[in-house]
Length: 559
Image 1 (cartoon, rainbow, N blue to C red):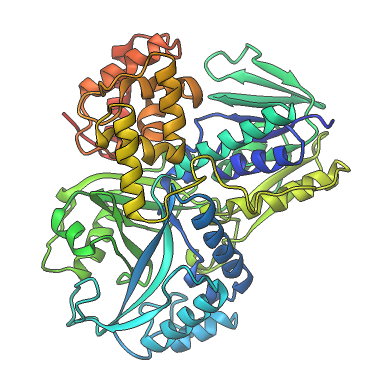
Image 2 (image 1 turned 180 degrees about the vertical axis):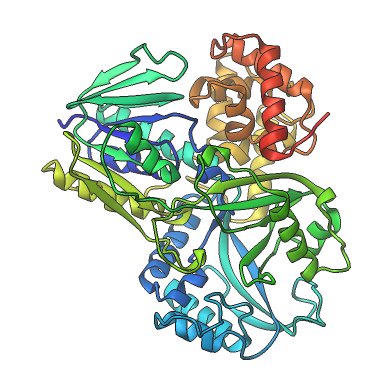
């Protein structure tokens, strides 16, 4: 049996790779200086998509791969990935044809011109969406369709500016953080069944001396949590790739040139009602794409695309970025008069893009690959690029490379393996509602509590609740101001590698997005962490620390 692979980074790519390796009988030790899914995974536009604009840069194979994975995730992870109908507002017939053709052919923009197409016209959008549907060949999703902007079947926008609306299909992943946890849960189940190791260390760092890797707690750097000789090291730290190599004292040329993308969430009810569960994909005044997306009872707007060289952990949405996004929304919906005062919270992350000399950030490839490093005593690779949609195919490719390096056969893959919580998923909304009612009645829970639990763990809900019931610990009392039963929260703490209050709020219970998150709720979560021996410090100090982080990093205030 091969020694475990050391995976640095517990984001979506690191988690998917651990799962793929486990399917092939190889264990993993995952180490992250932060928490699971705390980097770009948590700060994306939350879309599972084919990358319509990649066509403009001739990246047809990437579009094809992305669309194949989109179809796969709709089938294998329906608890997280759902169909989404998007509309592209169009101003003219011919806009962007010449500039788009020059980009496609790899030609430089005309003198005095820009690489970015400001407004794509009807003809170029029609061609792009035709190719999109051809590559997707997915009969489960409605195909493209052109509408007049005054049609009652489209999202109502400013029809004096936009003459047409072109509809197409993609998919949305509301909680990629929960998706990542499901990948790790599946990896754990596979590893346990195969008798191979899977260990996860958050808030730890690694030192490598020769062929020995040592894991240290961040707050106790002189202590050793674990030491072993990995068969390979995979640097899956995303935008931190170069910083990770430097911390390991491994010589390397610069590999990453990430860009910052910011988003905001608003509870502006007229905007939410106008979308009615549909989305807009529009080009802002400078030609950058902006999404206006449904987000439960709120609306998500993003994104920006700016060079960023600082520590990715310090990325915060700047006031000018938020104003830019608000203006993009008001260009579509001038009658709604959105303002920055309507922003409930914002977030910003750094995309793990490769170093590039492209004249525009949009032109930097979104492809992924493993970059080998020959300066390490242990086989070492860095994952470059990647996105939510292609995490599984990236992991399958990376596992193939690693297994070949170890002299092992790649005997299995995850192409047809559902994520935990996606098995036996109800096929329509009526069946889903009936399932929620049945579970609520069985365990004497409020229907809203069942819906909330389901949004986090899918079809695992009933099994988890049954286990809690058998243990005599299932009660219906919820955290203050929420529909989360306290005992279910304890289960999350016990089973999902949560160690801090931020872990629970931002990436386990998704309370970051709760419109009425209260101090009382945070106080109770801190007490639960103390009771579970995950927290040893004063609970009040941790609550104050979380409140300060929510204000600084997300612009979130609460009662």
